[in-house]
Length: 339
Ligand code: ADE
Ligand code: ZN
Image (cartoon, rainbow, N blue to C red):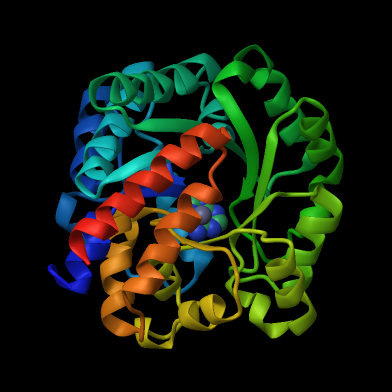
């Protein structure tokens, strides 16, 4: 190999499919936007905020993540946040990015839906024009709220559906099974939206089955707990259902004790369509290439696994076949030149 394995995985072309744009807000930007907008924060400095990033579980993270997102008020804020992420993504050779956003976190504070989608979308357009990166937006429903709130959010999204490729389900998993959102997902499906859901991060394999059977999702976000159910693993592999796995997130939120204990290699060995992603990079200690480097340093993975993960990321993307083929050719050319 002409470059080291960590360098190879950092530099190879990739798609990022599981990234909450609000989770890309670095503490410095949170403070800058708080000052610009006159929003009071519960921390007195960037350092004390960063020190608060010692999480015990998903909920302890979400409490801080929602507080951080409270600095976003106007279209330009959403643009600045997204542009900062896209610059970092470009540095990790992300060629295609599908961004989650949580409209309810903002509309509940009176932010117009149009400003949220407008700011994020304008940054994606600029990245496409300036360096040919493709992107898409996936609107997530907050599962700790009720289905009526999700329906009201879908109503607000209606004038903007040309900008939104799909819907997802995020926030506190335990106690909020996918079937709680069966009707709103059915409606989204009728509208032609693509469907994904977080399941099997902290929740049991039954939540993954429910996301597949009652929501009819095409990808599972996280899904690492699928290994507790052999029939589920066989089903996911047979149907090539992608799992968008986020290793640094899983370690930070204590789904695994450390990176060496992560089940990524087990998932790959079971022939699952795994992709690697950053989830909330500003909170979990790294962007997507850092996730790759950390996993490949701690686990028995080689250049063949790297190639598989790069291909999986484009195969699992909501892209037309022609674009997928073009990106796959970029991956092949990169590996031919560097391995
Ligand atoms: N929202 C942002 N990050 C999340 C995660 N890892 N799980 C559930 N909801 C989220
Ligand atoms: Zn997530």
